[in-house]
Length: 266
Image (cartoon, one colour):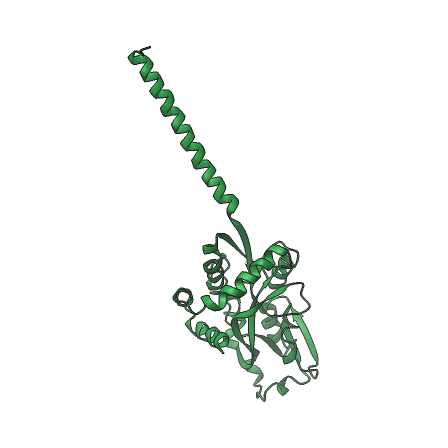
């Protein structure tokens, strides 16, 4: 049987349309397959620029992405106040927290290695004309500490302190010191450099009294513990790589890069 031109054109049109539909279906299936294969990791942190910025960017978030994304994970980042971030992680609404001090009482699992370190500082008003004589200067004084940091900083808090007062924010702590309700604030040095402290910093000075190791923490569900195992295995290898150096350099943190490398190598 012979087909006329109209018949041939109809067959060709049918075949081309059918082929187009098949290609579209294959394309959609490939996209769906990719989305099914990606596991999303939710990583939280406190606002500590440039390590963890308010918009979810930052050096520590970049480290997490550099380690997990090549393995097929999709990383989303969120920032919260310190206590809120802990709550979110403890209740399994996130998988990982970067920038956390170890606290055995938290219902979290901490990374084997620190991913950062910071100085512990005592901050006080310049106009008090205090003669610093080490931590004994805190004896019989009112000392403020940021909510959530009391236990990790416990070894720096002498029993001879008159009162240890928890505050909700650094701004609140500085205001209380300026009006004499507290004499000192114990904090991490990076907290002293935050934007919210800018308008108070010239009126204060500080003394370094120790160093803290800073860890990643994970929720205690099965999937998060798998992520911890990957992080513990990959991070020490990654931190000595050119890619890690580039991330720290991008955020102006080469001094911090030297500190963490020294901690891990030693």
